[in-house]
Image (tube, rainbow, N blue to C red; front, top):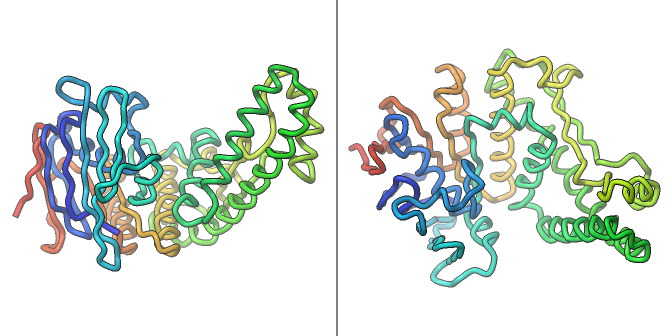
Amino acid sequence: MYISKLSAENLRNLEAVGIEPCDSLNYLWGDNGAGKTSVLESIFVLSRGRSFRTTQPSELAGTGGKSFRVYAETVEDVGKTHRIGLERSGTHWRGRIDGEDVKKLSSLTRQLPLVLMEPDSHLLVNGPPESRRKYLDWGMFHVEHGFLDTWRRFSKALKQRNAALRQNNARLLDSLDEVLAEYGSRLDVLRKRHAGMVAEKVGAIMERVSETVPDVELEYQQGWKAETYLESLKDRRKKDLERGITGSGPHRAELKLCCNGVPARAVLSRGEQKAFAAAMLLTQANLLVDGGQKPVLLLDDLISEFDTEHFNRVLRCSLDTACQIWVTGTEKPELDPLHRVFHVEQGRVRELV
């Protein structure tokens, strides 16, 4: 799948952008603050219904600060074309696919899978466990049938159990524990299986990205110590009641990243951590391709995060996925004629020919 047309209106400093990218490498070139990242952000917003730069949707709107629109035409590998759009006006979101309103923004996400690398991607290695849980979950979203329903049911039951704990409602806790254990165990099985798939691939990709990082190892930890999740919930109930929160489960799971048995964040330099994170994200892209869901790759400002050699290594690995790639940078590149270069200046984007 790739984007054949992209337009953005009033998103940050992009007043009225309309471009036709190629299905391979697209390079956005311009000065800092010109709007290059905003173009990538528009694609991310169209897919996820949120930004990777801010948690405040109001910050996305440009002049007037009230509304913005993003529209794209996508082409599947079989040649089928779709039209997808997202508009925010005030506090209201409106998403459309092929002219029909969507009830949930997750429908747009399914239509436009993507993988993002940006300056904060190193948090995948040295950040909190939540960042690695999200990595696993997004890796499964497009290719694991039933994942989203399982995740939603688990999240709902967890919220209800936490409320029951604060209310000290023992009768309700008995029934909620059964539901939470059922969907929590299902989610754990899915995550464990996906973590194993990542572990099988990431080493080979890591070797291509950086030769200095030692042997990498991944270990998934489920988030409870008892034999079953239901036993854990029962064993911890007294402590959970005291704290008013569920202390065990998939929401406490961890994907440990190690090098020669030592936590990666403890032994790798900042540059090596960035390389490890890039290898993890490239692994995610490859697994999506293997699952029949070719994503769009967004590589934001990586030239400032890596030296030229390692940037080129990441770019070659990205090209090998055969996915559409969007790259931002401050220097005009020399690319293959089959690739496209767009100059971004003060929120305006034009193709260089």
